[in-house]
Length: 170
Image (tube, rainbow, N blue to C red):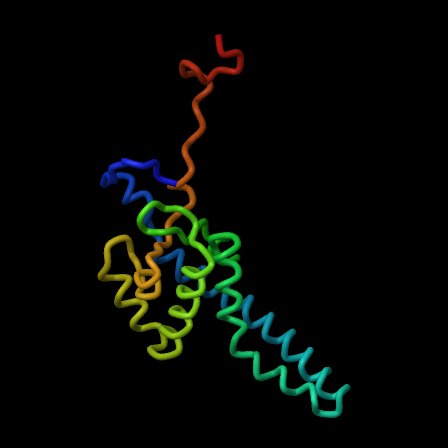
């Protein structure tokens, strides 16, 4: 988290968004595969439930389209990143202070992501990312979030040969 009164500089901004677009695309593909696996398991569960209840359980299959939204919402609210974003060293943070998003921001983010992909096939997502500062998509801007590299958020450890950083601290 950025300390109060911190002034953003160009080097920090560049480190936050370095290769974020590429990483976001790969992370989205990883998350797509994981969502498809979850949807397949849920479909199998719904079919078995439907057969065992002589057709009464088939109603749970109506929840199938909610899986990607729930997946994105729960992971971003709990861990500030989906598994695909974690694998690509990305995190979803608040734009104003780089703190983790709350549950409502994560829900708006997940719904916006699903709507953007469903209505435009990802073209609006890509266009907005290319034109905005910090490579923010439309579903990032509305809840006030930004996707950044985790490596830029974590300070480097002190060197062993610098004053105050040695193992004996003489």
